Length: 427
Image (cartoon, helix red, strand yellow):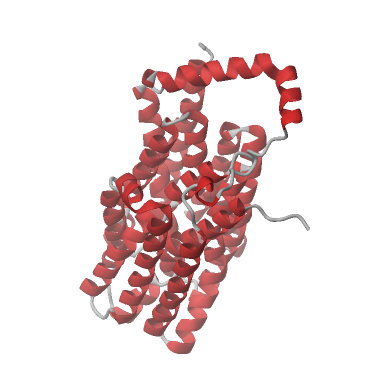
């Protein structure tokens, strides 16, 4: 039986970290929002402010992500990030006032910052030469799995044992997850005497490949060297388009998803129906992430991104018809958003891999993740404010806004790849 390379264990640990920090910390928490609002009598603006606080803390802490992992290393850093998520859920379990929920949400912001795709992407870059995009998509699937299983589990537990006990039980589960992460994660393959997956190339095969493709390899290496040695090869206009696209996508992915439950709750659907819908989105998101990685490895990041943008645009547009009460439209929403949200999870990492060569990769992926957090922060309270201003509690204006954001961000993605393609053609 063929031995499983340790890189895949690293991938599994990162998947569990993302399951806890992003899947439970962001996606899983949204299912509790209407329950918290009903149980404690909070307004729509107050409930939306939980997302604002989480995103504010995450955004501010994002600037220290590099220092955080430089000082702690990836093993301790990912473990501590997971423990932040556990502390937040334990905090929710004892919260009785708006202020207490705000404090716990702030702690969740730390988990949401340090336990994101940034460390996962860098670890996959260190541990994988072959199947890197696939490994990244498997990691990202952790948030999708959370969306599948948490809504029915959480709603069932709340009905059985109450809201506070549910938070406590899920917090204990996150602690167990942190132990798993601590036991598995290592910063570099060399730390345990291994090489990255795909780096073990047979010498004879390498010589044969070199003889056949030497000219193309030298040409490609020359292009990469030119890009790495000249910071001007990633000009300001490209930074502007990529950062802008990421900010808008962050608003759509984080804030748009977080308000799905209150959107459909305000449209008259019960919690069981909403949980089933969110689970459906999670199932398709998990499949979508695997498909995204597979396609990116084969047809490239640009074509894959544009295909997934179509799904995300369609999904947010159809959310505007939530108040029509159509089950058929809701099924299409679950399908299109489930597939499309894969872009918001993996897009910035793939864009960074395509356009940020060498040392620029870590810098670019970090800045784009910060930009996503910034976009989420700026808009996180807007849906609740718009709903309160509407006089009817309608979230329709918010999802019109998210649809426009999708269209603009997709256009900026296309512009970025087009500009980068013309730029590299000069070398």
